Image (cartoon, rainbow, N blue to C red; front, top):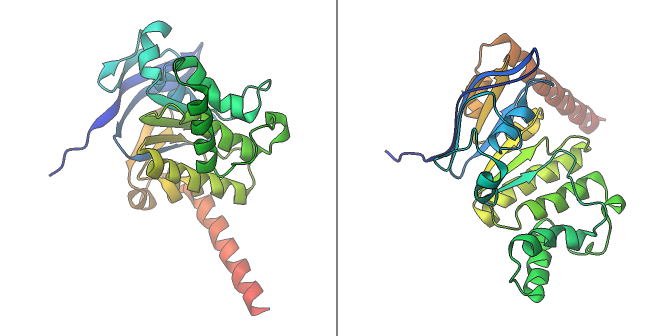
Length: 264
């Protein structure tokens, strides 16, 4: 039996904001090479969990180990070597408004690989733009791009340093269904091109069922479920069944509409 390697280990994680208890004992493992989608309703603490795991927010109690190294209690300088091994796609893309697309993607090379020749930087940026299927927008500013294009550029920037793990915070929020599905495909493409581990925080059921190897469901500050998609479909928890039921209802309605169109 092949043992899976846990590259992220979260144990009894707690986080509160004043009297508002957000995470109240989260346990989670993420295995090398998998795509894990963390689902949960609005305000369930999904983004807080992601920020704690990446060290962008300090946990109140518990343990978080990245690649075997404990990060709870570490400062920014101590976390820097680990940060270089991960890419983060923020909910809004977080592109630099004052830089064009080329300079946004080139930023990491120029900041962390100062000895890299500019010709190599240019080649790497163009290669990444090809990967995200936006080869002709180098000179455009972020404000000139659609929401979907901004997410693609942000993803190219996130993988520029070839991180072993990529974290996605609500990658399809604000996108129309067709554009959202293009982001699904792009996340899977990242696995093929860069052999990365992906942790996706989302409320998008279709995304989870499309790309996830495993799903974790965050409810009442704890993980109510962790497992493959087919196990989630057989869940008996009322809250989870209600959450995923809306997806099936929408899917069935779309199917009925297609049938009606074919008959007419």
